[in-house]
Length: 173
Image (cartoon, rainbow, N blue to C red; front, side):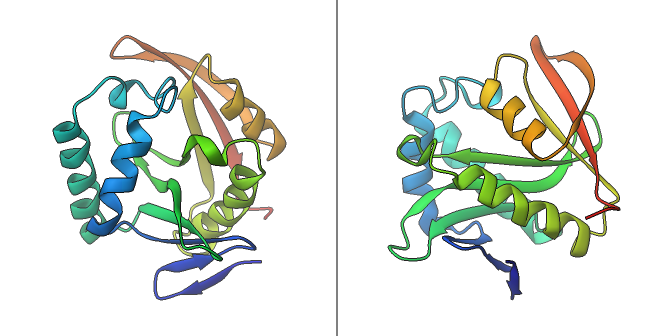
């Protein structure tokens, strides 16, 4: 199911690869879609310059430790969103995240990507545990966590945003 080739991960329908500057335009468009950042407080209602700076920072941080990726379809090579397997710095927890363009919602992409990312976190990052950290009202993220047997751990407020934290042991994968 998972091929790791020079920092590229392939799933049945997708290619996950390190973020590149050529991806920025499509990703900025994604961030501006209605409801795209409904449950991503730090990205909600920002300017194009903010999004560009955000992506440039993620690309720069990948030089230190790879953790922010672009996702495209295998067939059309169209960018469908981003994923991350990195440390949530405010809580110092290893996390997984998926952010898809609206037209790719409810098509099974999140589940396909999650399976690959959990394997990556275990085999490439050598993590024993991974966390899903999401805004409390985000039912799609909560459902995905439950589907992959993440356990609810706690609810917290960070910078005025109510977050739920779920965890999963990677030892049994």
